[in-house]
Image (cartoon, rainbow, N blue to C red; front, side, top):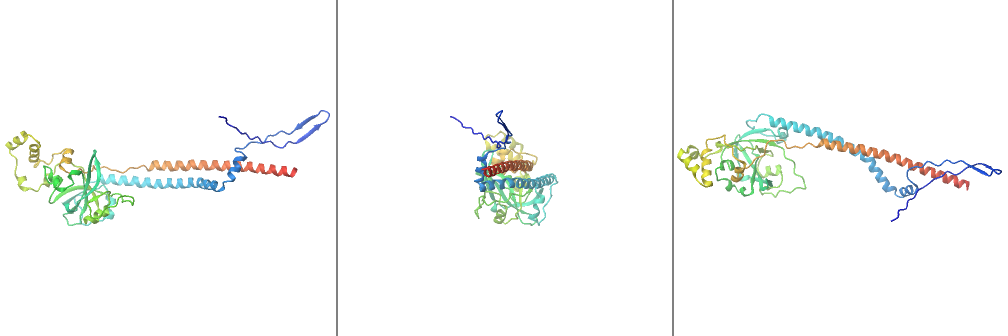
Length: 360
């Protein structure tokens, strides 16, 4: 395989200064032309494509301006995200609100995001909804969202109770067992939750089928409309403790297990004996803490952990856009300088051609 190299050499027209017939010598003015980058072929080729060259030049001029504007926008985004994270951290560390007022303004909730509160009332299981499917530790399940009817007479609010496995979606499967008072609490109870502002559903995401209880994304307005609640979304806090006050079977609470019963249940074989033993001994103990797998097996929703879930990558975006602006500016300056060099070469060639035509 052979490669052909072409090298262009340019000379000034020679000028006869002296011719001595006796000595027969020829003296010449030898001053080679200074070479410039490029050659005549490149210049001619660029002249044949003015449209494409104009588009490329337009993009090169626009890139520094556009990237600099995006960098300035990221500066504002960085300031906004930093203030938002600081607000949420302060709200999460603030004392728990003991009771919510009857009238709540949904437009004011962003100022109280991640603020913890306590509320008395009962769950409306007839309008219970499910969000998902969601995977947790490799197991398929759903997030349970239930309207909470407040005791003070205010409109219900949406409470995300937590994650349950797929087999516990039917309420009857959660109404039995030694943790049924946590999985399917009845009557008036007091819950602790925090306010959340969920992202708005985009047009490319799945649309909710009206009337069904299954939602694919956090569509708070649709959830509120279907359940007759305020468009206020809250999450219960991760808690594995028992809540004996949520029990409303008075006869079972008054009945204390005897020592013989404890020995009988503790020595019994099988899961039923263990279940009865745990159930009898947890009725009077509000300090007991269960294991997470017990909640999963008994259908108790596993709530979200209370920590800030925002990410702040705007500083990286800021550096990227400003760096791109600086790089494209340097490239644009270099391109302008190169174009001037080509223009100089064109001008020199044009002048030489005129001189040759005049002499001819």
